[in-house]
Image (cartoon, rainbow, N blue to C red; front, side):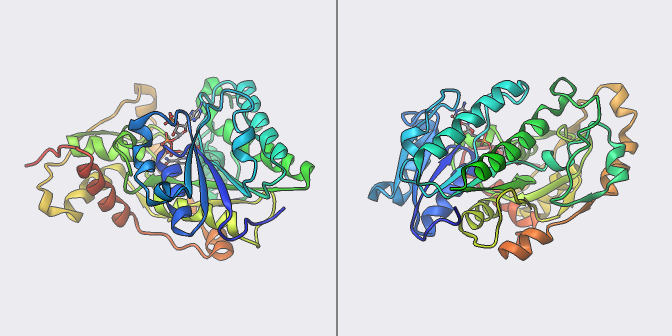
Length: 352
Ligand SMILES: NC(=O)c1ccc[n+]([C@@H]2O[C@H](COP(=O)([O-])OP(=O)(O)OC[C@H]3O[C@@H](n4cnc5c(N)ncnc54)[C@H](OP(=O)(O)O)[C@@H]3O)[C@@H](O)[C@H]2O)c1
């Protein structure tokens, strides 16, 4: 139980993804051995960028196929690892029995390994602020690690749109409880904000969702934030999210069940995000984008109410700064680097 040893071995689930890819790269840069878990290690499109990392050439980075819908898929991969970063999404968050089953079999593989001492699980700010009733944010506006959504609201359900938030809280508790029961390992939670920053591979521009939103801005059209209706972007640089995960794997100060929010506390309206692109990169000649509001009329009618609630929230990141010594890049840096990476990966900007 406790932090990974220096130069130890870490398994990272979701390694082909935006955050997982950056965690792999950060771990390699710090000298660790990495077992990158992807759904299909033979998928050249999704794993090419991992194979291009120098650690792959030497064998310090290895790739492993694991479809987490198949129980036992991590049994052999986790054996011999001291750390696990469970970053991957699940196939759906709307079926809690399925979600629980996936967590159970991952936990089982950790227990079977007899070598894992520290696990970091990737939750989300949805597990902090994902309210069914927006007025709950007016009643409790301080957004820090001790905040959970109102779980007693009878409307809170996957059908009501809270599946992701419910699934992430289930993740945090399932791993912390199992770690305590095992006595051999501990589980720490990272709740990232809205990740912006450079993509590492072309396929990552289609997911996100934030880098995909930046892509659509560059192409000339973008939408209101649909993840929290009319919420400003509450961002973190993907490289800082990765660094935070690694520090949680390494730290001697963290305790089982502890959670850390990873965000810069920058807050920017979606229109200002789009307008920032020309301010940050005038050389591009970016023509700007047209905003689309995809919400049905009853939600549109409540726009001012939503905006007032989000505007009254107080974003905090003291715990992660103090315990892990984290500093966060400003959104301007994340956005500039995100745009430039999208250009490298073939996005054609709409110019004036
Ligand atoms: N991006 C954000 O702003 C943000 C914010 C808060 C929290 N998070 C959390 O951070 C984690 C990573 O997010 P991300 O943005 O990096 O997502 P991403 O780029 O979509 O990567 C997620 C990865 O999960 C893998 N995955 C999904 N279902 C799988 C399955 N059945 N078996 C194996 N792998 C599976 C995907 O593999 P394939 O590529 O093979 O499909 C993908 O590589 C997620 O847990 C997410 O909830 C993200």
